Length: 478
Ligand code: LRH
Image (cartoon, rainbow, N blue to C red):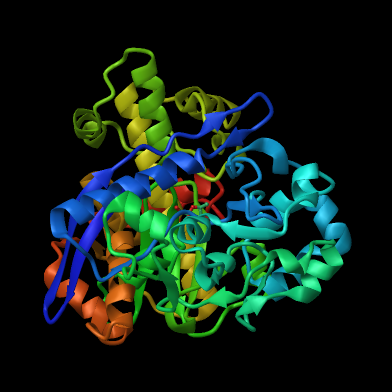
């Protein structure tokens, strides 16, 4: 995790990292949890550094990953550490929810792709627990951190839209859905929109950090993906994006949700974006496959430096082994190379024979998933895609960017890697009148950030055949 200071407005947009801190999940005997107090301490330490370096700051905004939450009791105390969405507690819980609200109806209301870890399923798995019984307020992770900074309570809309309890068209919590699922509506605070004021620093926070109490806290697009999409440096219509980090979120920005049987069957989501836009996308397992592989190798004392491995991967045999990155076996933390090998064995492929071949397998498989997802997004929404913007940490991986261009047959504009932080800062700057509307925000990113363009190479037939091999495209070779 990182704390950054940004400056935005009048042709300027820059970021300086002031603090970086680890976000280490903790495995308890019964579950996988987030150490949210350590995260909050990281926020306080970051703000302390801001005070010492800059004296003050106009506004603070917090974003994080989606779907996870903390519960507060009647005294406002946190009830235990938030569960990690990769915890296995939601396995098989879908059926219980769908008995009360059938899956197709749930989709019609929320527009949300089925992911076993969506908040609605996490709450269903917690049903009957003493913790949930004692809860009076549910706060998504950025809302919880914002609450500790300000004392205020609210639910930022882009993140609320990932819960499976939010009415995508109405732009508010679905009380009807909660009623049918036996979930207490009273747990959910009023919705805040990106740009809304969330308060000022509590006196204790000001004392702890050295920032003035008058420092404002602004609700940003608090779902990290929403902030990243807000900072996609597209200057023309007809763009798709891949927000690529732990996850690859690939899709389109739309003015209306696409909630059809076909979009449900393709498992597409309609999460809320900035200014009432919709992020029509699919979650792809992303660079998690790579980071867990590197972690496994390094734990075993094997060289796990990404740069030399990627260099060798670029020279490895193409399409030697492929996986569907969204195979559920890849979700949990643990030995990823073995799971990739097991997937290959299960599907009649020769498993990658070394680390570079494993990296090649992961990057090609992700490029294939980007291709399949963007094609389906275009088809389902009747959109023509002319360019793909690849933002987030993955934009630093030149091989992945080139493979994505080759697989999609489209130019890929890579960067900025810090799209989420830029989107966060831009929303705060806009709330202060320092930048204009969404297109102007994007222009500013395009003008000020270093971007790299990758043209597609080769012909698409090999990719088409490869996609068919792992079931990402119908039929065999074109
Ligand atoms: C990416 C992300 C994604 C969610 C997942 C839980 O960081 O927020 O958009 O689906 O984490």
